[in-house]
Image (tube, rainbow, N blue to C red; front, side, top):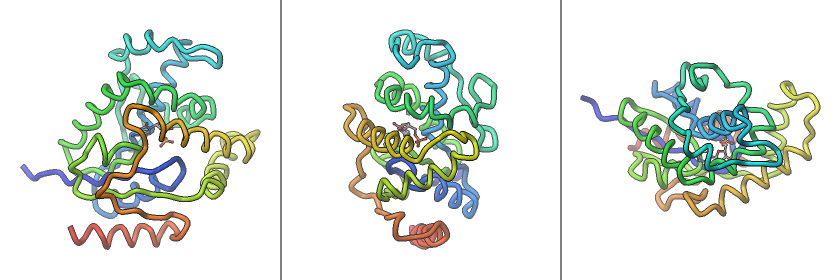
Length: 221
Ligand code: DC
């Protein structure tokens, strides 16, 4: 059996990880896996069950019922227990709560096991926060994306305003900087750059240039 080739892409929110990852998957014929969508899917599930509301989070309930959460991908759509929730997981309601769910070690263990299985089945591009450090420390190539918070918030604002017309730039900026802080200071698998990751500054490249450059680097492997 041909060995799978794994490309790990990490970085803070809205640095353009998924755009790069999708572009690489398309050009190389690999499968794209959005690990952040899996954390968002579990968050949505906890909200649907009313275990996670704006004022209350019953973590024990979520942890003891994780086996009831079935996540899968179909053509880049996330299915939660068989239902396509790709739109719902992008809401601000989920975005505001997901870092608290992603900080729970049992949730991470549950998802990391599934992410590793995906990497044994075929060649993949996976993006997230801990892909090059925890999920696939032996990935064939690792990228770490950076960009300043204002540019990232602007980018997310452009994407979201069609879906959530009441959204403001300030609310997104606040969400992004708060999530960065929570994601990079949590005890389990914080967002950090793997020692052997190649850093790409998304402020310096446009989408096409970034893809071109990453492809050039991959061809050397
Ligand atoms: O990439 P994203 O914004 O959709 O990710 C949503 C949240 O999930 C993010 O705030 C941090 C968390 N996450 C994580 O902890 N580990 C990953 N591998 C991917 C995402």
